[in-house]
Amino acid sequence: MLKTPVRFTSSLHSSDAAIDPARLRFPAVTASMDKGGSLTSLLDRAAIDCLAHNLRLAWPSFDTRRFTRAALDQIAPLSIMQRGLHLARVLRDHLPPRYSDAVAVLLRSLGPASTATADRGLGVFFYLPHTSFIAIYGLDPEHNDGIDPFDTSLHAQYELTRRFTAEFSIRPFLIRWPERTLARLLEWTRDPDPHVRRLCSEGTRPRLPWAQRIPAFVTDPRPVLPILEALKDDPELYVRRSVANHIGDIAKDHPELAFSICERWLRGASPERKWLIRHAVRHPAKHRVAAATRLRQRAA
Image (cartoon, rainbow, N blue to C red; front, top):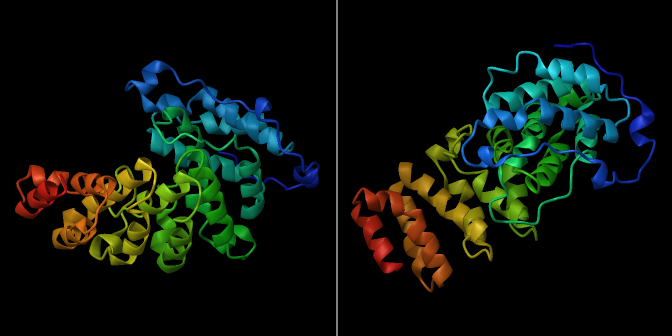
């Protein structure tokens, strides 16, 4: 892999005009991928070519040929999540060396934000390298000329979750800086974008599938409860389902706490909140946990 740092030139700032979305390229996602084909094909040669093209539009100094060669090197055996990390590390060698400048290039290369809250399909995994880049390099001032990168990193994740998800990349920040990250997420529970609001619940789940666990929240989930309280009556089912799954995570380690939350939420509950409660305790109810069964019956 190329290790020579890339000199950041003023070419990034040669124009403040937004990139015409029609000039951006994205890999085609075939029906076979959406029906369970190999996820690794979502970050294959076609995706890497599109990524290189979009970054060149955002920063004319970006060396697409050298990037592509390094990106394809030894990628074949890697899983989809490993490919995201691999491509993030390759990006580090080909984007501007200062983290905030590199993030500026990444954000400038993004396509339009998604407005759909139904299944967005697997094509959004195109942005996995972007979020992986934030997770790897967005925590340490050493990558940003000694300047705290927190605000840059959170802004990047705000934009990326509107196109993909930042539920994986937000977790290192919750582990390193739980108080300041939770404070920002609590602010975002009032955001008009449902993708941002969902991140506040989904990204803080203690046992999120495919993701790094958050040991402190496995041990004590109470610091996250204000976020769940703020979102329990969210107008979007997309968000409420995440809250229900989060309560389900809590129930695996702290069933009494999870059930007490659901008991309290039953008071004056709307039909939508009752659905959330039924969904939250469905797994312990399947295992004939009496408290969960009663909750589901009362929320029927």
